[in-house]
Image (cartoon, rainbow, N blue to C red; front, side, top):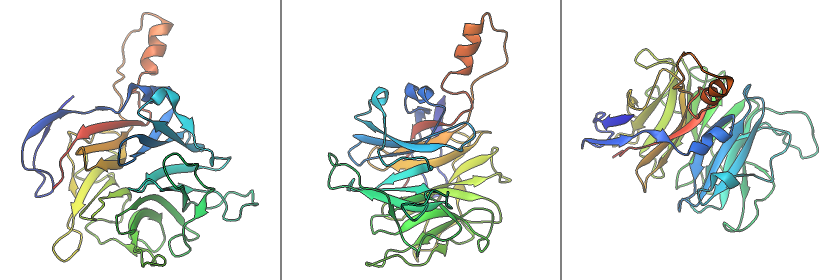
Length: 303
């Protein structure tokens, strides 16, 4: 699929160029649902979520040096759910969402909170999961952490005090802890669903999903928003049909060095047809773009 990128207000580069939207790797098809892409600053590590069809099982895996055939399960995974990894720029802390209980010896599933593991360097083992903060985490569900260079953390929260079903919040790093979550303004959030926000390191823009909007292309669409000179969020813009489809697009990650957008989509290329054999049917149904969650990449310059 050839993509022609047009200017989205002042958000996306005004220069016109074409790129190919593609699966990040054919090895996506090795997994049932694969989602939540993030990578290290040097590109040598990739972290993903592998999920069951009914999404009741979720575990985080790692891929070294782009060798998808040797992907491995992270050691801290257990019988609880782990998803939506975010690696800090120095590679020393990996944030994620989990429904593991707060107390180590408990066996009852908890609500979803934000946790992290840490290490000394890329060759070191990850620590046991660490509960982020009572300032950020509550008895409601918190998901999809994304951390700016100054430590501020953006995340999705399902709260009765929000504007809608899911909303995007920020907790500011105060030097010795986090502030209480602050709901982003109504240029970002609405009475509907907003979730999975990726924030740029300098907090100049966020990428996130809005669900089932009037101007959307169907299901969840990716949007981008910037701040004005006073630091307030401007109205978000749909990234357009070159990226969004009638299927769900979500879980964005942006590589600012390579100017590349990574995101998860449930789009499908499977069409009704007559099959000559069971083998052909099976091969068609199991192909990479089959309606299951898959990770795509595309060049995109955001100014």
